[in-house]
Length: 195
Image (cartoon, rainbow, N blue to C red; front, side, top):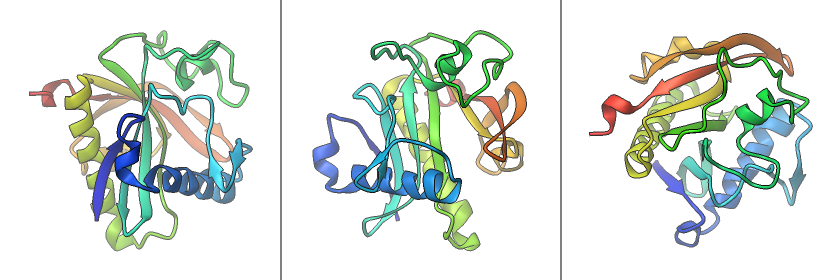
């Protein structure tokens, strides 16, 4: 089992992995969660999949087990910035505008985590191992990119696994139900792990 951080600068080194991440996202969000999201050629994507983002995957023999997308909070593409800020600014109908306690940050050392998933058919015995590989790759990427903290919209049970993954996390917004799943915005502090 491997993990990798992909960018537009290194996609060519990873063969089909980027497409496989988008295929796994389609399975997770469109097929399993029944979310109405853009898709083509069996892949889910949106306006935030730009060269500014990074994609992290845990994979083995071409199969993606888990993934996340990281986007700097300084990102801009047309009218869009990053998902949580755009939701707060009323650009996204599917996410409430009051998802954060404070204004969404625009800061070089703060990145957003979105589209996080673990495949639904992964055996329970492998889930923690996969989650830890994902977190370790996020930590490596935070060091490379100079990320001190991340903001994420996660299922509201995040506190149950945060300690097991050794993540310093705290609530950044209220609990809310979206698409039948309870979510909450959270801060993930990587500042003390950048050295």
